Length: 264
Ligand code: ADP
Ligand code: MG
Image (tube, rainbow, N blue to C red; front, side, top):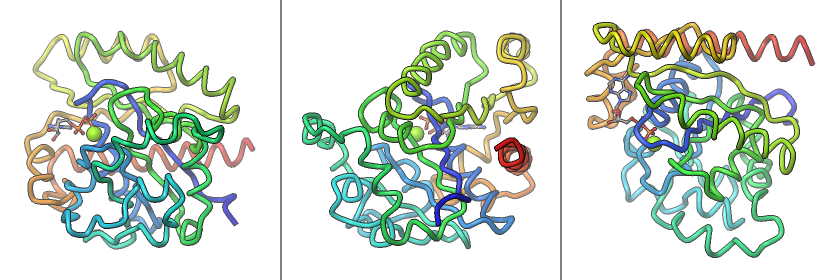
């Protein structure tokens, strides 16, 4: 029942690199072409939930509840203003998860288990929006996912955190999830007027080759405004360069998934 759907975790231990923006807009773009998409907000900050206009009053059942086994995906997912896109919102309860669950032998597999609960079978794509650290929540995401999508900000220190991230992916493969793949690396907040940004793009492409998507997400003020209206950029301003880039990224993601299927 679950063999066709894809679970993609959006991870980078740095904050502010575009994880949540990518989760929201990639999910919207996939939903727009008819895929049934779920975001699971795994960051206690709840930026994905807020950015999709989910009021705090509508977060009675959250990602915490599915992690501790007190709710199913069907019970926790709420619909968004985007047709075909639902979200399991987060609350500050997530802050307690690590402490409460750290002694349990299945502590890294709570999300994996939740993602086969009632209601989870409805989705073609599940995107996991991770917090900015390698904690137990990120570990649960990596254990549950088919692949990792890494947003990298086009700035001087971009590559510095990346080797640590790739090491973590290796470690996850050796321990909790041997089949974890790198979906790809997406360069975010690119500013063409900045020579350094172009240098970073060149360096990342040299170092990582094919893993880097062709699509560059530009720095775009419309993208940064959209969350304050509780909307994905793609709904807020479809024509802006940022929205167009996210639509293009979605087609690259789908193409890679097709190639994986052919290879499998
Ligand atoms: P993370 O989830 O990795 O912490 P966010 O997606 O929340 O990162 O992005 C950090 C900040 O940068 C947010 O204020 C967001 O609106 C802004 N931002 C993200 N992508 C872009 C972009 N392409 N252009 C302009 N601002 C962006
Ligand atoms: Mg975030």
